[in-house]
Image: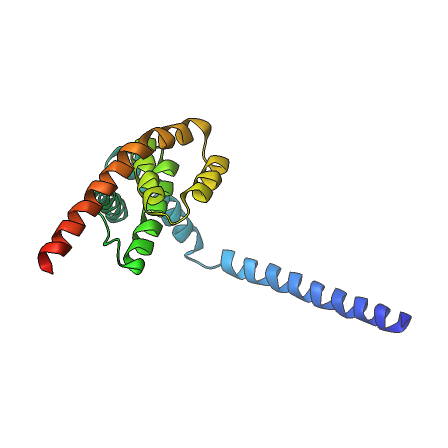
Length: 175
């Protein structure tokens, strides 16, 4: 038993030393390459330019894409506040619930508590077990945000009930 431990330690030491030797060899080879310093300077300059352009204006492709993505998310957030799922379709309600919770969390993370609370209140309104969801939200949300949510719930539920009545009227007309 002692022999195996000693042999294993020797083998591990040899492989460790070989690995360190390989790292040193590779690093020297990389640094001695004729274009190493040029590439290093270019990489530093490009990083610096990206930081400068992101800080000053939105002229790089990445920043434009980021701006477009943000705008699409905001548009989606604004659109879904007024849209109701077909409450008879369980999958649509589940999808709506998950999207509203996700959007609410994202908006709260960005600091937009007003819209975030709107989306979370939509999620609570369509939730099958709203009391349990409210308990979870009370534990996870800051106190002020949770109070905003509680204050908005009656108005949102009223809007959902009005939407439900409108859906029922449309369904009655179709039949």
